[in-house]
Each structure stands twice: as C-alpha cells, then as structure tokens.
Image 1 (cartoon, rainbow, N blue to C red):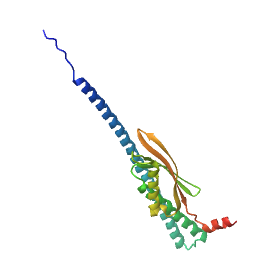
Image 2: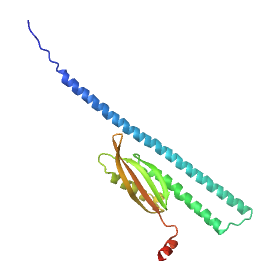
Image 3: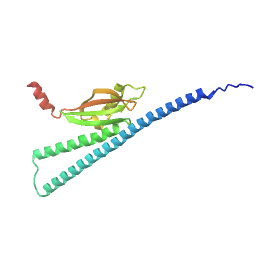
Image 4: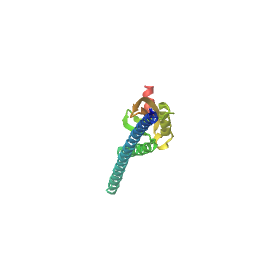
Length: 201
C-alpha cells in the first residue's frame, strides 16, 4: 500500500489573488468617491452659474425699466437733476462691475475647483474656495495659478487695484487631498481726490 501526501499548491496563489482583489476593490472605491466629489462640485458650479445668470437677467431688467422711466419723464417734459443723473450713472456702473465680473469668474474657475463663498466688505471682494490637489502639485501653486487667471482677465481684473492670496489650509476629504483658500480683491479708489485730501489732512 502506497501512502500519498497531497499538497495544495494553489493555496498560496489563491490567498494572493484574494488580496489583489481586495486591493482593486479598495482602489475602485476611492476612485468612485473622488468621482462623486467632482460630480457634486460640477452640480454646485452649474447651480451657481444659474444663480449668476438670474442675477444678470434681473439687473438687465432693472436697467431696462429705468431707461423706460427716463424716456417717459422726457416725454412728459420733466428735466432730470444732476443728482438723478449721477445716481443712475452709479447704478449702471455697479451693474456692469458685478454682473460681468461674476460671469467672468464662473468661466475662470478650473473644473477641479469650486468657489464656496463670496463676500464684499470694506471695498474688498473676498473669494473662498476649495480645490483638489494632485500628487505632483503644491497647494500654493494651485492658488497662485488661479490668481494669475483672475489678473489676466480684463473683464474681472479691470476695476481691482490688487488681487492677492489671503490664507489657505490643507485637508483630506474622502481619501483625496484638497486645499481651502481665500483670495482678496481690493477695488480701486473711486474718488482719488478725496483720498488724497484725506492724506493731507
């Protein structure tokens, strides 16, 4: 009688295969989460662009209404005072400044970046946002590249005295490195004579 010893040579290879399958599943899970994150950012950007377009349309409607009222006043033989003309001029300048700038800003944002908050205070526009960081990038380089985009846009940058980096923080979201940042744009002084007079006093 011959005694035979059976050795399962497939045991080690099967274990290695299971480990590789788990690794692939984990990689696909991370990849799916990153795609979900980018998709949500895309939806948010579409929503923001829709909101900006609604603001632009509303401002245009207001200006058309004002122009209609001016034409009616002219037909009635009523003269507009100097202060009325100045106020209308300010309103027109404001419409062009923000409506066109917000539209330009939406076009300047990269596909892997999202603006999370806009605030205007003390003659300064504050832009807060979040951006994905790739393995061969530094967070500061991403911010600097976006600032250069803003400065090179004639529509967006023409009324700003300076557009500069304010602060940033790096974090990990769904196994993906991202950077939160803040950029400040200081508007040019609309009344330089008044500013000069204030310095002299």
